[in-house]
Length: 293
Image (cartoon, rainbow, N blue to C red; front, side):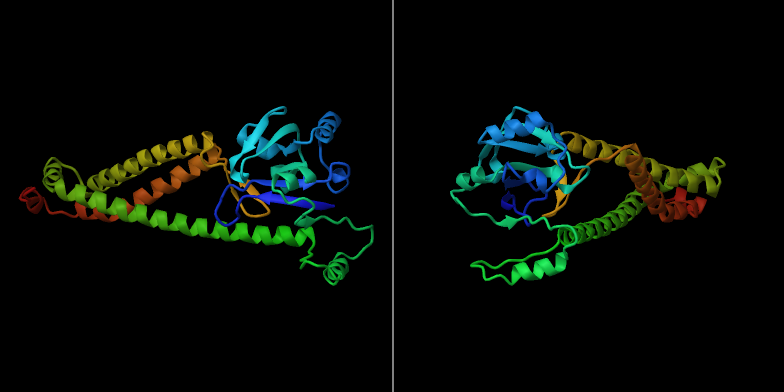
């Protein structure tokens, strides 16, 4: 089945939007779409009709019957004939339109840029790929199994995850440094206060615990504020998903994610407070009281 593929740039957009122009009469033979017969009937009857994957529909809040204009794809307009699911497949993020409709919208009648092939039972996919690429065609083809294509996309996501983890480590290191610097400045300004507290009977361990607790509380407040801001951004759909050219991951977070994040940040604040807290607890009483602020 020839497919006219339109999508936003994989290199410049983190939120990929993809439309597949398919043959309306045979597209269901190539994928098991869970969609109502009435939706398929409306899709076939409407030239500008489209079937929308449930994940992308949920991402943008689209409903059946809506007319959608995609500025990201040069203002292409279509009517949502129905919403489908594919049991967790990447197709749940696709928009299926008529192939001729997309070709005419881009003024590229008769031109497709992808072909989906369904092999007969028992056929060797690798041998079929080699045979297709060896055909004397007027265009260069790259034929591969769908699993291979998806594997390459997954590798791209793995790279993104790895980079994200490195960024998280860097952020935690920055938190350690920032908390250490902030608490150091605070303890320096409060040197006389610590000296007075020692004369009132405070032990070194008490000073140590007080400074560390203050650092942990500051980190906790900052973590909660940060999590609230991020949740607000996600809820407002300002950051919808992270995508490669084959797979899209929606940006969602539950209570467990926030608790882990807050815990890690608080731990970073606590660790960053240990050194200045230790220095504050080691101050000599006379030296501390004589300190000039």
